Length: 170
Image 1 (cartoon, rainbow, N blue to C red):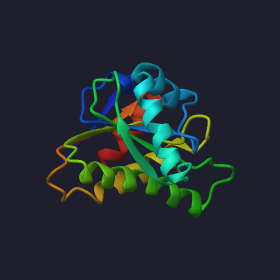
Image 2 (image 1 turned 90 degrees about the vertical axis):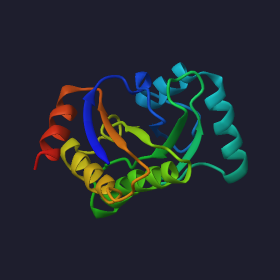
Image 3 (image 1 turned 90 degrees about the horizontal axis):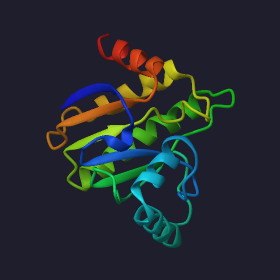
Image 4 (image 1 turned 45 degrees about the vertical axis):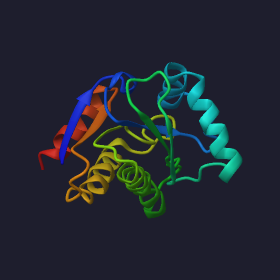
């Protein structure tokens, strides 16, 4: 499995699945979540509503999968990251669960290429350096899984791009 860091808009990536930094409602929001819902079109929202009707809201650290609608990906894996608010080990574990649960859904659905945003580092204020380390460590638990060929860390800003790049060369 190859790990790659790129700086671009995650909604433009041609992979099997992109990961959405969603909120618990799954109904869209700001940042990555809003961009995915806007560019993906109403199909994503309709599937999210079906998920909610079946199981209720998505809990922090959990993940669900839907179509990608009009996006170049086949799937969107929605995961809810924690709000930092003075953080701690519990918040770090919840963030790791976002990556672990998304990867498990990817494996269960035959995904070979997957792209992750920088979960919780925007309006949820998770410290970017800590988040990068957690993300990379969580994904590296899946290195032996031969079905997933490429994992992209898609950074919208240069700060995250540099943090992830530096973490991967350690």
